[in-house]
Image (cartoon, rainbow, N blue to C red; front, top):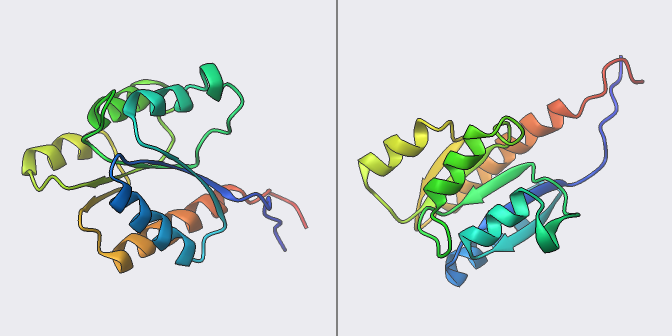
Amino acid sequence: MHHNLVGRPMEILLVEDSLMFARIAIGALRKAPVHHRLTWLSDGGEALEFLYQRGRYARVPEPDLVLLDLSLPGCDGREILAQLRADDSHRHIPVVIMTASTSASDRAAVEQLDVQGYLTKPLNLDEFVGLIQQLSNLWKEDLIVPGAR
């Protein structure tokens, strides 16, 4: 039996205030074999507006994956993650943390909130691309239409 996949690209939200690290992540995503659309925001408050489709973001698609820095202006990445996990309508969105923090307590705190990855900056590009590919494969499996031929 053959299955059809919905042919839309993966929607990725990158929340990163460092232009340098955003460029690295964007460049790595371009090289990854993942068909995607990317939105980059540098402010945590703006990211919440996007995630909850408020204001000028009222018509944006819900992201299939959030790449989230912990230290952000406007609203801290930890708070964004806590809000997503406390909300039934957003708890399912996979989140990968990308942070310069090497603190064991930071890592333990966010891992308790069910993150799909925790990457320390500077990013290991092979590890980053591998994780995105793995998450993309899981996302594609969720798009299989049962019984389709």
